Amino acid sequence: MSRAMHQRVLAAMGAHSMGMAITVGIQLASLPLFLAVWDTAAYGMWLLISALPAYLAMADAGMVTAAGNRMTMAMGAGDNALANRIFQSAQVFMLIVCATLGALVLPVIWWSPWPADATVDQRIALVALTASVLVSFAGGLSEQVFKASHRYALGTLLGNLTRLGEWAGWMIGLLMFGSFSAVAVGGLTLRVVGTLLTMAVASHDAHGMRWGLRGATRDTVRQMIRPAAAFMAFPLANALSFQGVTLLVGAMLGPVAVAVFSTYRTLARTAVQVTAMFSHSLWPEFSRLFGQGSLTELRKLAERGGWLSAAQVVVLCGGLYLASPLLLQAWTHGKIAFDPAVMGLLTAYAAVGGLWHVPRVLLMSTNQHGALALWTVLASAMCVTLTAWLAPSRGLNGVGCAMLLSELLVAGACVVLALRALGHRGLASTVMP
Image (spheres, rainbow, N blue to C red):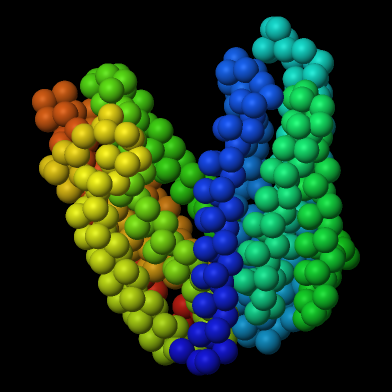
């Protein structure tokens, strides 16, 4: 790893660390601030309203990420004109998506009979929150420009600051006016400001990538549809393995088991989140080396990154397991006791999840994730099936076994696919036309 690459990776890790700190800070500060102005019923209604537009975030159909990968690979190959054509083709696609969603969803929100007792204030809030999601697509494209032009850390930082600004807009609306619409419009206003600033900064020193539609081609969009569609499999798999398993635990073991399971899983996956910060910091470097055709350097970086990530997750999971009795006591005020067997299984599950993060990012960053997407969905379905089979007789131990076995399946598949990709010398020419 060159010194410049080392500095870029460290800077990206710093930006991701700041993003995690912002997320934690928002989660900790939101509840007391909202409840200082609203009662529990009003806050519950806000949670319902704000959750609905979040599903629209998947409406880009993976195109933003797929385009960002190809832009970075093209820049790595020294083809700035191709990078610009990909960027502008992605803009056309997202413009069509946003216009279609706006035309279909916004009138439905305003005139829909559901919820039956929704006030004008609540409908305005829902419209503003939906608009915020649509605006965020432009911010996502801007971050891909940063990724392709050796400024990934800066793009990540600005994205996190925009997210913080949107939340600050919520709080301004809450504390000054106290209505649902004021909260949502305040967030939308600062989301728009942050996105415009990010777009302006992204345009500077963008190596020929420009905002506009003239360079877009239908063939370029068509070439990105397959990897973009494959990206959509990952949120589906997450829905199966996270929400699906949680619902099964609740149905079969009861609400107390759900509380214990969710707490244990959240604690165990802390190690995975730390590992993810490192592996995602390697994302643009993988794309760039692949675009350059520097497969020897790519192989070295992937191997070193994989071993370093493995060491991180093993140490973190071991430390978490040893500290979990004290952490559970402090975090839950002693209401959730430490179960060594269940915690051990979920910690092992988290460790396996961290072990295949770098190979996963390698495949995703080079648009070679199609087979992995299928394996991920298969493993998630297997997890749900095993949970339904084992939970009634073995309780949370059975749930932990189901999660560990399914994670081992997808981890093994991912490592094999990554090794195969690294050993195929002619692959770069098939991906980069």
